[in-house]
Length: 186
Image: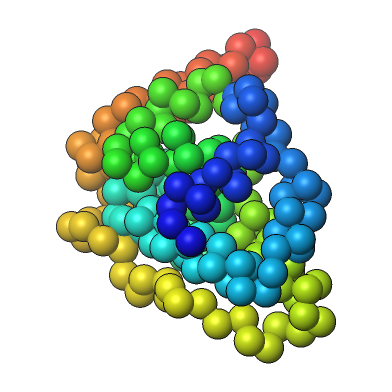
C-alpha cells in the first residue's frame, strides 16, 4: 500500500476540526475489518513504514517535552497519537518536530498524548477477520534506533537548542501553572 492510500484511510477518520482531537475509532475498526486479510497486512506494513519515519531523536525530544517524559513504549504511543492527528500534522511534525508548538495551542483533546488503540487496530482487525493472530507478518519491521544525531533528550539545554518553540511553549505553560499556584496560596 502506498503512503497516499494509507493516509487516505487514516485521514477519513480524523475530525474535521483537528483541534477537537476526535478520532472515529469504531468506524476506523469497521473499515479495517472490512478489508481482506492481505489488505490488512498491507495497511499494517504501511503504518509501520510511516511510524518508522517518525522514529528520530528530534521527535523523541518533542515527545519528551509534550508528554513530560517519554520512555520507549510511551514514544510509540505518542507516535500513534501523532498519526491520529492526520497526515498534514504528522508529516509536518516528522519534517520539523518543533512545528508541534504551533499545533498544540489549538488542540482541545485530553492531555494524554498517546494512542495505543490506533496502533493496535490492524492487529485487532486481522484477528477479527481470521480468528487468530497467526500469519500477522509485516513486510516492514520497526527500526531499532532513532534516526539522526543522538542526543540527550533529558538535557534541558539540548531540548531548548534543538526544539526552541516547543521548549518555550512548555516553559511558558509551566510558568503560568506556577503563577496560578502562587495566586491560590494567597
